[in-house]
Image (tube, rainbow, N blue to C red; front, side, top):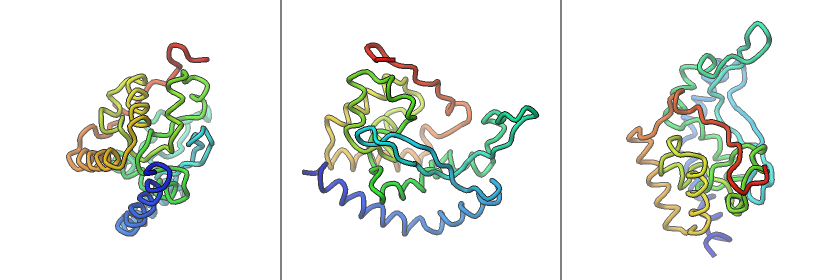
Length: 205
C-alpha cells in the first residue's frame, strides 16, 4: 500500500514544500550558472527509471564545456567551476531533480539512476534495482556513497527494494540531511572519479 499509493503522495507533498523553501536558492544558482556556463545552467541526461524506462534527468550544470585544441572536452578537474564545486560539495546540484520527482520519473528516495549503457551489464539480482523508481537519495548514499564498490552499492539498492517502507524512507531522508549538514562523505574532484561499471559475475555483459 505504501509503495503503490502513499509513497507517491508523500513525494508530492514533500517535494512541493521543498520547491517553495528552496525557490530563492534555485533562482540564485540558476542565474549564477547561466553566466558561468554561457547560458546553460542545467545539465540533462537520459537515465533509466522504474522498469528500465528512460527519462531525462535534470541537474545544475557544474562544469563548463571547454575543449582542447583537438576539440575534445578538457578533463573534469579543468572544467569544474568554482560555483560548480561548491554546489557538488553540498549536493545542491541535485535540487532541479525535484522537478523529476514532481513529474513522477523519480522519487525522493530510491536507488540512484545510473547510465543506460549499464543496463545489459547487470546480473539478474542487480536488475531488481529498477523495480522501484530511482531516487534523489538512497540507502547506498547514506551508507558510503563514493567509498563503496559497485557491488556494495547494488547490494544496498536491492536491500532497499526488498525492505521499502515509510519508516525506512524517513530514516534515509534524515540521514541524508545529517550527512550534508555535517559535510560527511562530501564531494571532491578526487573521490568523484568512479570507475565505470563493467559488469558483475553472472551478468550478460
